[in-house]
Length: 207
Ligand SMILES: Cc1cc2nc3c(=O)[nH]c(=O)nc-3n(C[C@H](O)[C@H](O)[C@H](O)COP(=O)(O)O)c2cc1C
Image (cartoon, rainbow, N blue to C red; front, side, top):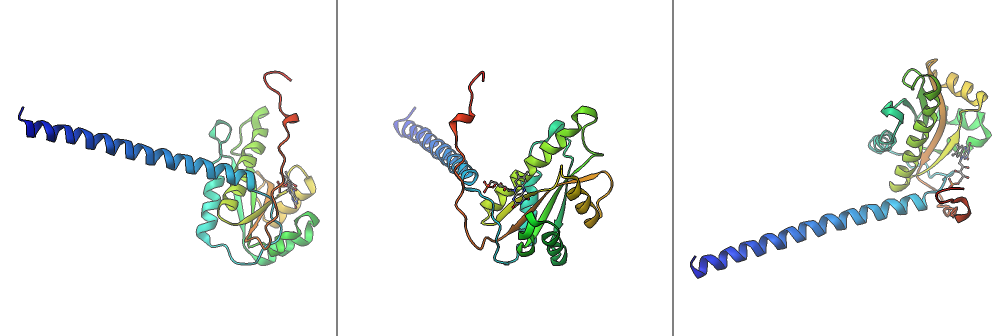
């Protein structure tokens, strides 16, 4: 092999190695940034109960619902159903009916997180629907926070009175149970996240 050919060969290998290292380090840096901001979002999320009234657009609502539907479910049944409420008169009605949901009146929207018993697992495993819809609810709260929105989870199920009132108000089919009403809007104040870290809650291996 001529000296010049040899040199070009070495240069090509060197270039390939440098490119690989650069691409790899970029990918790693992105993963690190992504996971760091995910943890930040989890640790800084807090319930937001007052909103500016600035509208949340339909693309943002889609993102919230995509995040909700990215949650895990038992046997991947995805028994969740969502009722997005943007109608001001319905939001007002919710705030008037339930003292624990007064914030609905100023929210840009609310998402009623439901479970469809026709899509749930049978028999004893049916109750997994609550965990499935809860996982979706937490995903939605975290997505809202990551998008600069504020949200609060308001419980419906298992309180029968709330279940009946929401079912009637939203004309839900018989098989659909409302589990939570999540109010969403741009925060008018940013409450400090609560520090709930408590090592006393943790047990390793056995209690
Ligand atoms: C099952 C459940 C039901 C809740 N119901 C209500 C409610 O009806 N009204 C309300 O203002 N907040 C409600 N919350 C929000 C809690 O009050 C809140 O998550 C808790 O105080 C912890 O505060 P943080 O979300 O800021 O960490 C509910 C939360 C959960 C998980």
